[in-house]
Image (tube, rainbow, N blue to C red; front, side, top):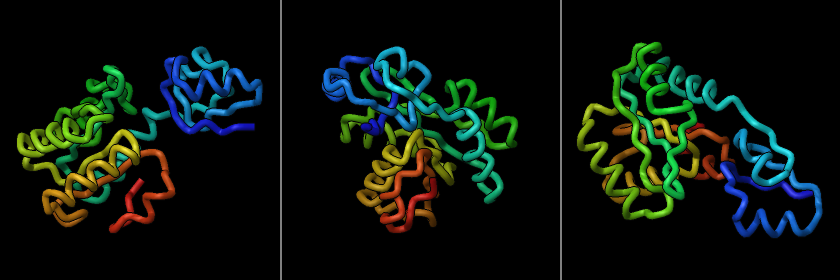
Length: 176
């Protein structure tokens, strides 16, 4: 059995094509609803809207009121754990948090990611915390913060979503 760690497959990715040709059981442990249809693999799906809301609620409980959010732009497609940018804003309102619009920076191009994040933080200088689409997006935020001498969590709290074990190796450890 193969565990394929990823989500949002189009069906033409090299790893998908290879695994389909092998004829072995494949499980996507953290997939998207359409992954079964595009790959034919078994998929476990999490209620990401609730997970996103829980992350925002946790940050609110910690006293943050100005929470920014990073979705994901990959292959020209925006992805939001909240469902959509509009749903994210609705969740902020329900939790009594400031209505700061989220962004979805380009994930695969670090220079474009850094540029988008820098512009976002400059435009919303009141942001105290960032909720990131995934721990892998949060890793890029850590890199940006290190490059720009932004201290985590003193200057900016960062939270990811997915439970990547490597996040515990960061300094400080990633909240996820």
